[in-house]
Image (cartoon, rainbow, N blue to C red; front, side, top):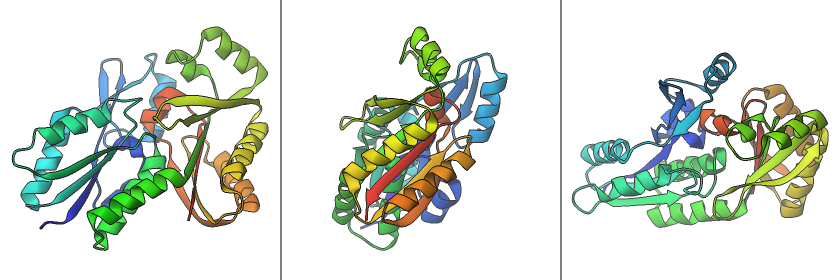
Length: 284
């Protein structure tokens, strides 16, 4: 019987050093600027992405990995560790074909390998934290069943909100109309986004001004978690200072037992734009 290997995609926004430390395999999505193609978190990072956004006339888009790219990773793992168990955790299938590509790849492997492909039904470090937890448990010798149980527990216990600085990118991507984006800009409207149980993005609320939006997010987190012990992940793409200020407000209000930091990467950035912050809170 082989070891347990953990696979994910680049939209999980797990820092490179942590992926390397835990031996997490990552299959990148692609970022496209017109005819130019980049591999997310491999040939372009978040800072480089937003530099190109500012300089490029082309609206960036993202593209899922092909089944063959997953197949190559799965087959390499099995060559190096025959009999390995693979747990592959991915971006919500409701917003991307990334998960489906992994499912197809798992069916293309010869023999009867133990490959479990999971639709996280969420995005960014909201499932990145599950990937990290699974990899840590695998390193410690936990069983597949124990890891799967913890993944499900974290799914139930995690609250997530994205605070978007501008409506421009949602408008460009067809999520809202141009008139709504213009009015939002004039009125300083800040959308609060989340994902529902099926993994679809939706607007939870929209507030006038960042401070009111932060207060609204904390109220919703309070309704869900109260004063239970929690771990908080704060994430950002271009405005680290504002994100850390938000974190201090959260720490002053909640029973925070641990803090993690992440970057909202280029894949999510193609849809929400610069200045985005995210909060992921889960019970200990």
